[in-house]
Image 1 (tube, rainbow, N blue to C red):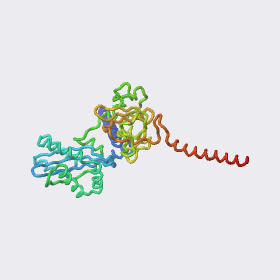
Image 2 (cartoon, helix red, strand yellow; image 1 turned 180 degrees about the vertical axis):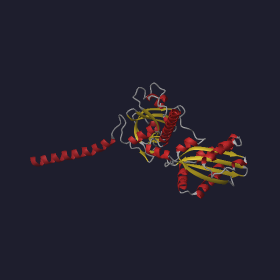
Image 3 (cartoon, rainbow, N blue to C red; image 1 turned 90 degrees about the vertical axis):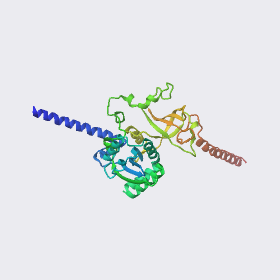
Image 4 (cartoon, helix red, strand yellow; image 1 turned 135 degrees about the horizontal axis):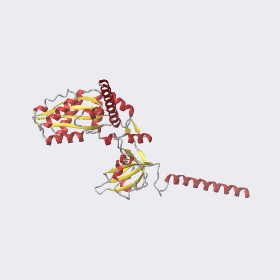
Length: 364
């Protein structure tokens, strides 16, 4: 009996280990946009797509600490966690520690309510709006060069300019980790749901197409169509030679970019040769529905392949959109053919008169 019990325990542990690895692979696949090779490297610890910046500052009687997760592959901030307080306990935080205990300490001090809500919100807004693509590009270079002085200088200036603190003392360190590590170990980051990971496996095809529920109009252009997949996207702007969004109509062919980042999106982009170095490139599609939104802007559906649609919610109504030169609207005139026909007519007329001249010459 004891031997059977031991075997059962071993089998249970093996199954739990398998399930754990399978879940890690699902998470890694999500963050690598379906790239299985990179997902395996992420699990092994050789593919690290994040830098965790640990910082603290002090100015007169105000103390602050923050944790910023920057994805240097997608070039965006994926999580921010911070505190501003009048308590000296914040200043005792050590940025040289690993990011996990540093994060845990921020959480502990926040739970003690020793923080200033107004200043905390001000710091969060300043950080999330101020850390733009240009900032991340510069920071990525400094991080990869391990330029500790440069990094501290950037955040020193940022804290003074954005937060408005003068004579501020700043200290910054960083760790390089993966999105998988953040998902499994961070206490502040948003966690992926089973819906994100498709771990439940019980949903049928209709439930997988979550965006179909957004088609709230029975007369919508997609109603009754063979809809296999709906993804979120954005229009490509062309300020000089583009077409005003207000003049777009059903049948127009435009350039769009998929903004969803999941395995299905990546697979579609790769099929169009529109996925390069982890970035989505523009693809062409035809408008099948365009509606004004009462709050302003437009809701647009674009077909890019049989049964595959891109949904676009555009807030702006004074922009110009890049059109697809390879396609023409229904009923529009082909100006390129007109350009060829005019010279052709002239040449035929010249040949006609030349023939008449030859005939007259021989008759005489």
